Picture (cartoon, each protein chain N blue to C red):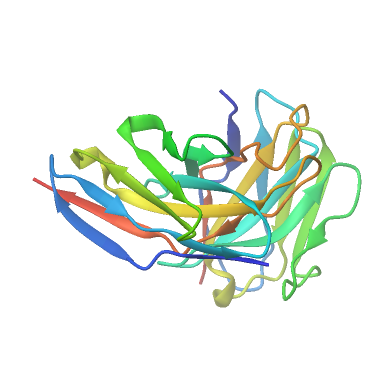
Length: 116
Length: 119
């Protein structure tokens, strides 16, 4: 089984400041990792994903995340945030596999609050 | 890009009524769709996996008679909350995967959710 921990329920930050949203996971098998963003009253949009290869993954809207296998972490970062980045961010994992559907396991989310 | 349309976006109804929520994949076909429930300030909880042409697979603790799922075509899945009560009030989100894509790494495409309020 897998579990995902997002320790920070809310992260306040000023506009143009850097931000890091933390994600740690637990799994007995290798996983794929994802970050999703949810704007108010909307579904989820994929920001980025880690499958294999380079541990630094770049996504949309200037976000990036780094996979650290030894620390079982996949922290999300952005060097300079905008007001429009205010949203809920979810880290998720799914077991590696080539066929079929594998369940996405989500963390509890981190609300990023960007103020002027 | 892949678009998933969910309807209605918001519904308010009286206790005891049944509510149907539709999830459509607009520009791709989806043999598998998923239904999630999201409580305030909580994560998404997978309720069930909807498979085209067959019965849905429900997660442990989810009442299949309460939450009826039908996936009659490759582009449409419906979730019916039967005899809804205030405790069923929540944000319900569907997602879908393009049937042409294989592998667990392929992303799910999410609808914009349905806010269900039972009075």
